[in-house]
Length: 68
Image 1: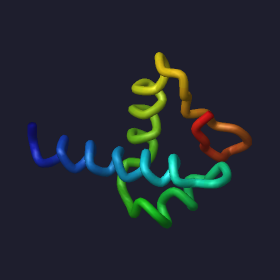
Image 2: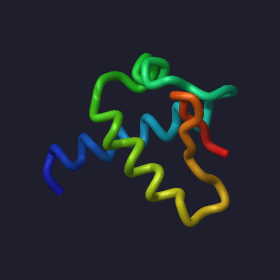
Image 3: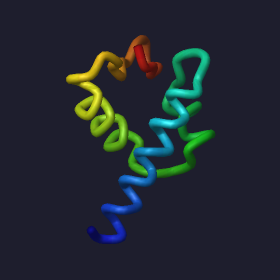
């Protein structure tokens, strides 16, 4: 795995942790405030795909993101 792939995976895990810890839906700006800068769109796409077959799904509602 390349450094770029490792960095992307680490950022995705940060975004995942931020969203799971959130008490309410988060905007992209809120997510970046906690997870830092990175490919947020890519991380969210990865998480949507990863959780699509699970009992919990990552959803976008009104421009904000939440696990439900």
